Amino acid sequence: MSLPTGKYRAVVLWVACRRSKVWDVEFILTETSEREQAIIFPVGAGVFAGHCGLNFKDGRFEMIDPSKPLPVVMLELAYSTKYKNTQVAGVSATGDTLLVDTRFNSKTFAPEDF
Image (tube, rainbow, N blue to C red):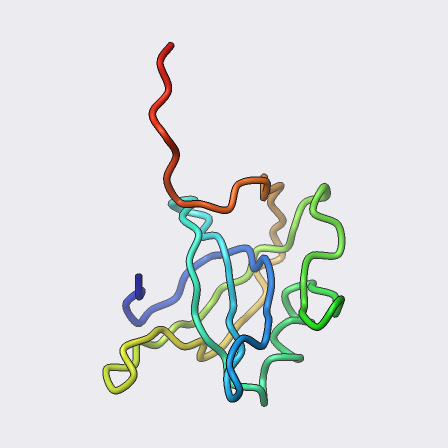
């Protein structure tokens, strides 16, 4: 799913080079708890990841310690009508942290009877 252009409070989970000319960014929106993705061009990937408190490990930037509260950042996202995707246009620190449960990788869960 692509997000519309705008500013979003988020916790960035990882940044990895999945395609030759762009890096994928996965993050959790703090307002809705949705897990989303966007792309960033290689020029800004390292600076972006460092600003989000990520560490380079095994060929990608990821959380230093997922058991500790993670920094919340304000992501500036821009939707590209040409490529039909969401691109990271900027990032700024909010000074907040949030403890995030990252054990689940899917956005939906099977119904459960109680």
